[in-house]
Amino acid sequence: MIYSMTGFGRSSIEDNSYGVSVEIKTVNNKYLDVQVKNPNFLNFLEEDIKKTVRKKLDRGRADVFIRCQKKESNISKMYFDSNLVSNYIEAVKDLEKSLDHDFKLKLSDIMQLEGALQIEESEEDEKYLKELILSQVENALELLIQMRRKEGENISEIIKTQLDEMKRIVKEIKELAKSSHDEYKDSLIKKLQEINDEDLKLDMDRIYLEVALYGERSDITEEIVRLNSHIDQFLLTLESNEPKGRKLDFIVQEMNREVNTISSKSPNKRIVQNCIELKSIIEKIREQIQNIE
Image 1 (cartoon, rainbow, N blue to C red):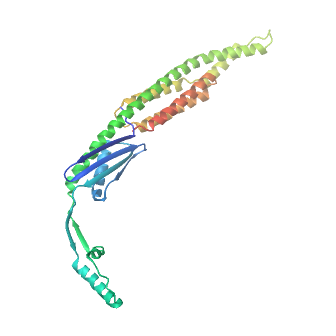
Image 2 (cartoon, one colour):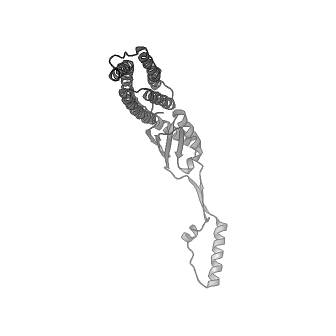
Image 3 (cartoon, helix red, strand yellow):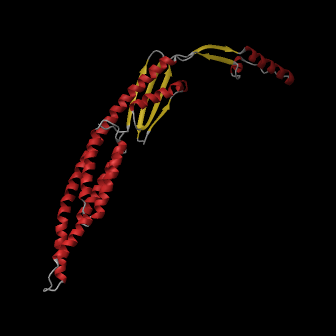
């Protein structure tokens, strides 16, 4: 089972005190990066939220958006700082005397004076808020994981089709490699016959030696075996339950290495063309696995 790193999950709840909404969006990232955006009064929960996300995800950038609206005011007490207001009033009276002008100070003016009106808020029930918020984070994560799993299944099917095509091409390369030696021998004899006098006998031992040297230089048997092994290993890794993105990326690198070696060693044009097709498929697979957790 593979999981995509792209997904979205949302969960919300309302009770008598709060309306809570949690959204989690994930995208590709080499490592797990969790970012939390929440109201200031929930800052005490940020590390708990990150720990909850890290328990469920292994890779990707996860943006967690939390909205929490209080249904009732948590103001427990409101009062004027009488000493401060008295000082303000005395200052105004002094100014009125010096300027011989009545400013007609009103209550609304006093309320706007900095520090005049004091508001005391009741403390948040942090334990209750923690249970409420984290429960919604977990619900959103479950929906996110479901989406990532479904997207991962789609990616898996695409990659398996591409691997089947790779196997077909590798099989064709293997068959072409078998016939290359005989083709090279026949071509060499034909060319020598064209340039030799009729009475001059061909040195078949020298020809067979040349063919043997050609076979040694262009032998791609080991590369084909390793490439098939990488394909099988890739399929096994796809079906494993462990995080596999980094491992698959390594296998793809090894696939590409073997194809490059096959292409460089073989003078057969059809084999080279097949290698170009293989490299194109490998690049498509590489793009797909960039989104695998």
